[in-house]
Length: 151
Image (cartoon, rainbow, N blue to C red):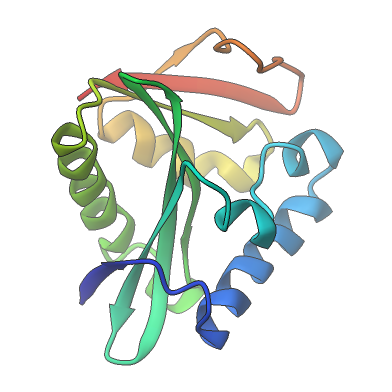
């Protein structure tokens, strides 16, 4: 496995991101509102990292700046065949180091409250995230909760 920044032009990466967006949309508008679209990834301040197994993308995540010292984790995704095999944990560790190198000292995220997100919340807690209030520009709803951690 290797992790590389970018790859949005790769057809398989687009398919992975579209799969993620489709599942988020199926979980409701409040969840979908927090998911990045393909167009969002191309905007300034959004950095996509893709985990590759050979020439296949098997996972991804994005980082988006909230403030000069605070970054948001977005669209953490692992293909179903690779789940529970450490891909997301390795990607999170990589992103913690990348965020530190870029000068950030806090990483936050929004996640759904639906049971679909149980494994994700468990992963985030294992990696030091704690539940928190929404940061500026975000709204807490019954379908979305927020987590943060120092890095």
